[in-house]
Image (cartoon, rainbow, N blue to C red):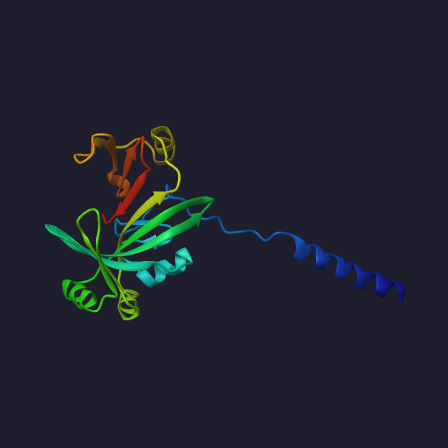
Length: 203
């Protein structure tokens, strides 16, 4: 009887210890971890550009975005989802997803938008209603703009992403350099006075 009691006590102790041990957490994807898929497009943060839908992207990011249509003269209209704060691997950032929708869908969404505002850039932003959001769930993500909360300097960027194939000055801002990584389908905007902008696009 004593041996049975000791055995039960050991089982209880082992069970409690196992419950208190921290579970192994899956490592979060980082912005420099870009996977080139067989179709030539990139996969970042679990999002395969040109394949992953907006609904699937929300699952990967574990949060919902704020959707809107942006219309500006002489530029293509875009459907975008904005995430104010995404935390991955201890890095906090703002995230913008470009979502592929037809011109006809854009017109329909605009006609039933909740709000329309003129932006500083000159673009008109149309905040979408719930019905439009439902239509976007199955639409494909075509680009990601990643805006880390801290500025990444040139040395940090080269260390993480490697040497850029091409570096050019932004024609709209003489203080901004654009580093191009065509093999990774991305470009990075660097400005000493502003936060870094990383753009992932289709192949």
